[in-house]
Image 1 (cartoon, helix red, strand yellow):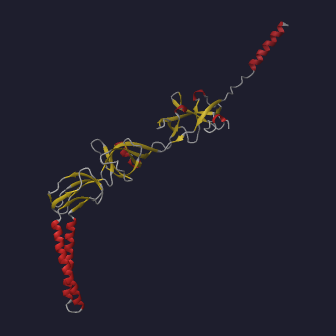
Image 2 (image 1 turned 60 degrees about the vertical axis):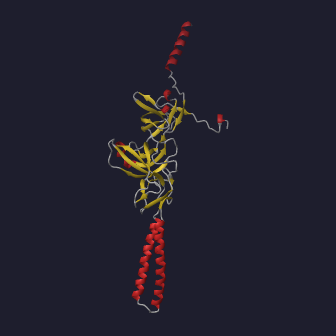
Image 3 (image 1 turned 135 degrees about the vertical axis):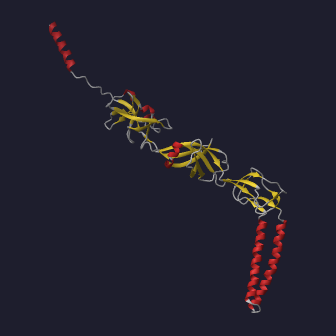
Length: 351
């Protein structure tokens, strides 16, 4: 009987060893993420400086003695604003004298016209009188212009940089009385290196930001010098898209941003860093398949974006899903369960 019992136990053990080991069907729960397609636009920042459009030397068109100077250095002036005046006494007298002559000759021409209409004088006499009136009228207008030239007004908006004379001084015609910084259309100058100059055809948009400010102002391209300076830099000039407010002045330092097309890669995708794992010398991700399994996929990582995500240039396509949590415990072909994100409006899944 004892021998029979031993035989039964041995048979049971042999039967147990002959049964196939059940496969591990445990399902791992994972979180998924969809790679974000990055813009195919790169941005580079450079230091720049605000410049006035140009500097204007202002002077009277005629000679004379300065009677009034109405501005001082540093003043902001608007177009048409009166800046200075000359002593205009002599010019006023000249206008009055010619005005008297003109009025008198005008009366004579009127009488000559009536005589011509009555056939009392010849057409030649009437034409001479009329020509004399027109000639005197031109002389009168010249004198009026000279009187107007005793007033010096700002030709555009800007800042008075220099005042070169004082009241009571004599000045000649054209002598520079003021230096005006024309700020009606300010611009920004920036120096760019050789490598970026070579990519100038890929420049798309320009903007600038005052240091310490978050607002970026749109800029327009003006010119890019084709010759490098001694530091191998190329001078780029930009104009403000809209007239800047009074807080931006000539000489101010700004940060210039240039957007350009990225010609290195046709597509860049960003995934969280935790989705990347190492397999030997390769960087990999777990790609989620339609049958709820995962596959190991080698990828090329070129760096990180501004949000701290890994930038993938090869190995993934937009629309694929990858595992972003639990990457170190998975196996190739393993079935997984997807953990859904908790709803912000259904906390605890009670609804």
